[in-house]
Each structure stands twice: as C-alpha cells, then as structure tokens.
Length: 121
Image 1 (cartoon, one colour):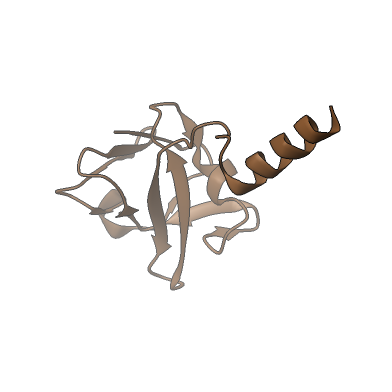
Image 2 (cartoon, helix red, strand yellow):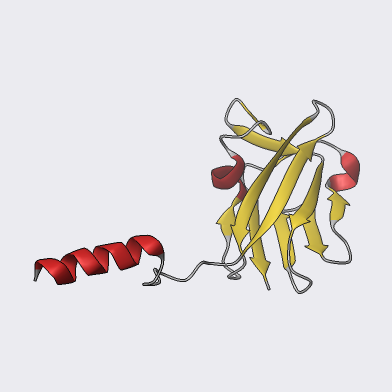
C-alpha cells in the first residue's frame, strides 16, 4: 500500500499522470491611451461570458475600482480565435486573427464597469 501511494505521488509529480486538461485561452489587452496604462488578461476560449470588471478590476486600467479603456487588442490567440467585448449601448468590439486591434467608441475613454467579454476558438 505504501509503495502504491508513493509511486502514484511520484508519477503525478513527474507528469506521468495527467491532471485536468488545460482550458485554452486567448490573451486580450485593454489600453487607456490617455494615461498610458494597459493590462493583458487570459480569457478562456469557451464561449462563456466573463465580466470585464472582474477580469481587469485589479489591473492598471482600473481607477477607483472602475475599468476604463480606449482600445482593445488580441495579443495571444489561435488563428480561429474570436473575442467580443460588449457594453450597451456603445461598445461592440470584435477581435480576431485578421483584426487584432480596435478602438472603443472612436478612441474615447470608455468605462467598462458593465461590460462583458467572451472568446471562442
């Protein structure tokens, strides 16, 4: 019994026994061109909605607890990756392998405290 536990522990530590599969991600950067701040966050490419505020809230693009940005950029992705950032009524940003950068609302600083992002491969 001891040998089995020890062997399994060593195999797990060495990677012989696989853990849960890695969730594929895309890396998205929000930038505030007025302040010069920017921050990259890895977004799961599972097609699920994720709160922009929750993802970027503790980064340099957050001021007084509110995420604000002038642009978004897809900086780590697969050729099939597509990401969308939406906040009604003014933001509907689309990012993909052919269009990796976009201004938000004409380059104006936009508060994204109620925005959502989703990415899919």
